[in-house]
Image (cartoon, rainbow, N blue to C red; front, top):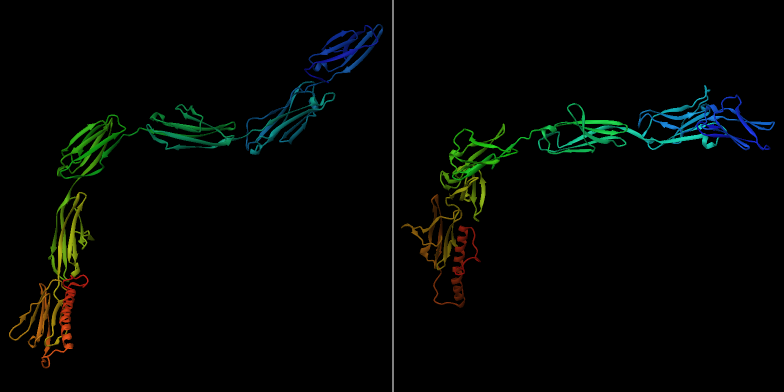
Length: 597
């Protein structure tokens, strides 16, 4: 068996002859298609390269004198020069059927060829080529298998094994195989683009666009810009594309493509770059309060404009009566001193090239409250149970708001109302006091106060005789008159008689009779009066005479006399302080002055 294209030598030896002569021929006397070389007892026929013309039965004839000897050898040719080839029509895509071809080139004789195709050591197809050959020729033999790749096929191997069933050839020359590792692809899909901050931009701004695409292997991201002629201008191979200092001519369609060997998926996004408008800022704000007689400065500034021009006017086009100063991107209008004629809406107009912007500032005047006063109707001196209305007024700009309070004993103010008027109905003694009205605005506070006096007619009078209304001659008697409901009242204590009433010299409503006599008996009357009325009470004092007069003093009588001389004044003092406590509300002996005690 000789491999086509290889070199084969046939050797003929003769023994028992010193100088043999050799000749070569084919059995059918066709050309040898080889070179003969004889030397001594050996002759060699070399076929280089072997071809179909060498497939014969070759005869070697040796002549030694008159003797001849001949031997033959059958030469068969075959071709199996290369390993099989595995061909794929393109990248394997998941889910897309594909036909794999296993090609064995330049085979002869192909009717003895067998091909196996395996995937991951599992046989996909086996084929033997048993059809008869027509003539002698080299032929490419192939086997085809169609299958649908999956993601699990990634990294698995395809194996194509070709076996030429011939004899006389070493086994390793009769079998050839080729392996190919599968690369499975998923065509890019679901390509998305996120834009930050927005697809609508202003001149000078920046934008970041991030592209993502799914596929196997992971697609490569390619950014480009679509030109007016439809062509794509490459920009970047990164997933993120950042554009800074944007200009209007940067507007357009930007294309993100996810690309791998299986295909391409695109996503377009349109950016719109707008001319950046200039802005106007006013100060101190859209509305400003100016104190009457003070000064205020209005400011107007322009940004994103290289050479702005300013102009000021009032909304009613009245005279400005102020000083304007413009420098660079800023202009000021100073009003000093502020008068009533300055209360306007001032407009600042900024011109930047062919564009104009206008903003306004409202100037409101103010001055602190003053001339705050309280009007009381009907009067600040009232009778208990009546009603009173207090009305507060104050000058100020803006008009002051009012706050009514009542001044407590500790000097603090107790909030009452925020109305202009404060009305008290069915007044009581406790309603007396100082009432405060405050006029307030943003400039300050002004206040006025009025004192309400609640007058009460005397009542709850008490007229008492101590120790009793019936005493013995020589006893000490204290007649006391009190009026519990009114702190300020006049108390008149007198003794009634047919010849005329006698006004007694009382001390804070108390009159003391030392060593009462029979003539001290009678009717005693107390009058309590003030501006609102009068009330009186009366009692009858009875003085009894003692039985007989003795000229001697027993020791017991002497002790009784001494004791009574001390006890009676003490009782009088107690009655005095009790009356005083009744008028003032309370009294404490502990807090009284030592001299009085």
